[in-house]
Image 1 (tube, one colour):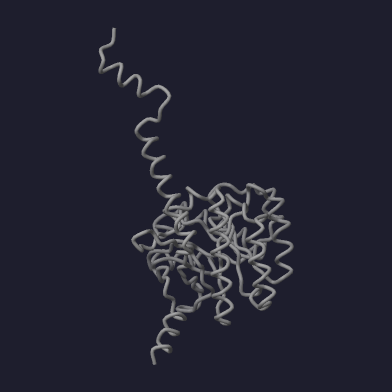
Image 2: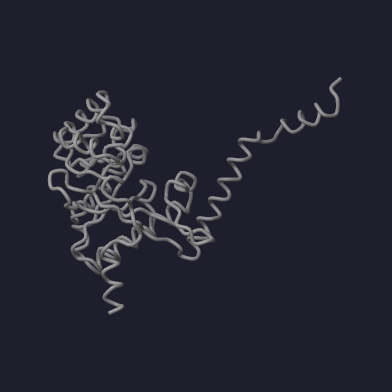
Length: 280
């Protein structure tokens, strides 16, 4: 007969989470609460990272606007710390909507800016997201030709027919589309030729350390060849070193993004320039 100590642990194991599951559950609840509070108090902002032209040193092709939230202490929390947890919830749609609104405002206030904004395929039918887009395009129709909407490869493949129809409708308005994390392993090639993305962003797993990795060089060359066949611009993500950048240029990548060039910042030069003028 088991002693009381063994019975105690047996009782804990039945119908309850194990310690790891409990810790993950607690973390996820804490994350969702943090994001919910940030949404409630509009503590949402964009961090802007430049995407550089590969063959024109120092020239920016466009910027990516990356969603950030502020926690209760005022710390800026990057999307990687919360997006996986809230992506499939209502909060994921709310963040997509807020990011779109912030991006459209930045485009409206800065006529020389070209900007990509991330969204989930789940937001395609979200009423508030579509209302935000329509309101800004009505207010400033010239925004459309400077707006790029980024959809991850995994998100696009959840509802490929819906994504294709969505892109067809908005590309007529002049909006461009980028497939993010291309090569991450989700795309069914039978759908790929129907998407008509304007930009392919090559997943960072192929980019980091590519200067010393012949396998990733071969994979990236193949991805670039696919993009060129379909007349799509290529962007390599997570470029961290000069040697990797040089290799990517030799492989024919059109644009480069990563900390080697610049980290994302919530205070891009156009906001800093405005602040200086206001102080004069």
